Amino acid sequence: MAAALPLLLLLLSFLLPPSLAQTGTLIDCGAVAPTTINGREWLPDDGFVTAGTARTLALPVLSPLLSTVRSFPLAGNRGRKFCYETAVNRGSKYMVRTTYFYGWVNGRDAPPPVFDQILDGTHWSVVNTTGDFADGRLTFYEGVFVARGKTMSLCLGANSDTDSDPFISGLEFIPLGDSLYNSTDFENYALGLVARHSFGHSEIVRYPDDPYDRIWEPYGGKDSNPSRNRNVSISGIWNLPPSKVFETDISAAAGRSRQVLELPWPPAPLPFPHQNYSIALYFADDRDPSLQDPRVLDVIINGVTYFRSLSVTQMGSLVFAKVWPLGGSTNITLIPAAGSTTGPLINAGEVFRLLPLGRRTHTGDIIALEELRSGFKNPPQDWSGDPCMPRQYPWTGITCSEGRRIRVVSLNLTSMGLGGSISHRITRLTALTDIWLGNNSLSGSIPDLSSLRLLETLHLEDNNLTGVIPSSLGNIDGLRQLFVQNNNLTGEVPTSIVGKSGLELRTNPGNHFTSGP
Image (cartoon, rainbow, N blue to C red):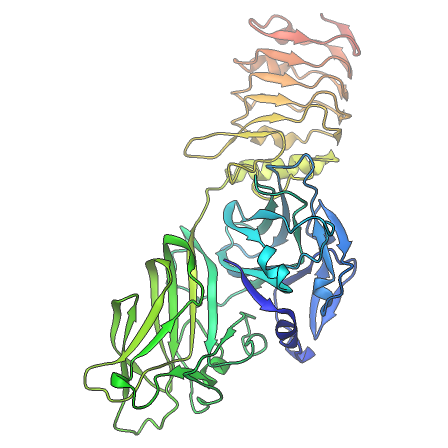
């Protein structure tokens, strides 16, 4: 789910000392030069994306980050995805944040588009900034993902609801400490932020107070106690919340019957009913630990007792539910445990939706396609991210298998305006049955494709290929079409091909063979 913040409130939180610049990759989408915003360096995005158009908003904004966007053409590209890629450490955990501010980039008559965002082949969420932009607010999404390769991709996809060009303002990849959110089964899930609040605060808490630059939004109320908890010494909470969130709390008012604290949180109904969520609640007591009346409470979520007799101390306490089915409005109820006369309090909370990880294309096929792309001039603009996943967003010209292993089974880039050459790495696409590269401007030689034992059709006609036809093509048992006419091939047509049973062979006109059909 997205979180939206008032522009002024968010931008005031950017006023940070230059000496405290965080690590990670910060991308200012649409910018043409590096930008330093209060000590943090944001990079232009041209080194991370190969598609789209950089645009400067005409609408005045309060931050350079929001002054530019990159937009991606919808025309002819519905069902396509366009991806940013950045180098990461395989197996490491990252917080990924996307920021969107529409700014009428598609024109005054065009409402903000609705589109998909995808992380490494996993459908993360639908991006809809309509309500936020109407209120003058930016929209951001946060997720926690483990890198499954040496690169990580964030893609925007034009779905059936998209009616104008998708766009993006900012993109961040922030490495997280090993202990953060380590109760999550990252082999099968990622986390999509729904809400993160610092209770009792009136301003955003983020970097440098949070070294990972998580955004803790303010959540006030009639029971909030600003600037109260200053005598805490938090330790041992493996999600490492910033100490600043423990400076305030929301607590039950003194004299209330049983001093019960009921908190509607998250403040908005959960957007995905009957799905699994991960919840973390943070508590700390700022009172003198020598007091004889300890603060002990029961934690109840939507009427279900989740944790009994939680002892809240100056060192802090964490209650978490790594898998909790929820839907609609959620209520947190805190009650003094049996025998405790001290009222409950709460300092902060986070809730994430568990995102089932999408399957990934076979690693060998990904590597082979990347090598093939590097050999082409003018490859399709959407050749980035996962080639096959999600299913509704395959690369242009790519058909993938439906089996247990996601393999690339056909390649059809006929009349795509390709230049360059055919990398020999294409031979690693061992599940290919069809290769259609006709009517382009490809040069160089035809690779030895004999390792493609499943190949049935090979169309290379109407290019600028040179050299000879590899005789090894005759060893592919199932090959039934070989079209190489209108190239600059020389030598003899191999007898293993001329006499091959069941093969439709087209070699002329346009070549310079010394013999053959």
